[in-house]
Structure formats: C-alpha cells, structure tokens
Length: 71
Image (cartoon, rainbow, N blue to C red; front, side, top):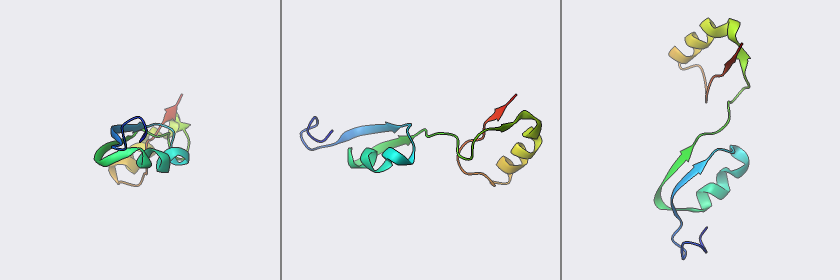
C-alpha cells in the first residue's frame, strides 16, 4: 500500500479479517487515517434460545465484539 500511495498510506482501511491481518492493516494506514474493523463474531454464534441472556450481556457490557444468534 505504501508503494501505491507514494509512501503516504491509505486514508481509510476496512479490515474484516480479524487479528491475523490487524498489524498489516495498521501498517498500510496513513498517520491520522481512519481504521474500520468489522471483524468476525468473537466467541462464536450462540443458539437463539439464549437470546434473553445475550440481551442481558449486551446491556451489562459483558461482551466483546458482536453477538450472533442462530435459529
């Protein structure tokens, strides 16, 4: 990316791959650039039957990342 931008770096980096590419994404970002991490669901999906607990976890800030419930 630095070669393509004459050493400036990208204005915005969208990283959807998670921790494996995090450092490379940061390295390609210009100083004061915008970083958007829309990474994977952390902790894996849970059953829809646990929706009430998932809401309690969200409200109580007991989660990290996204919550995904599967039917």
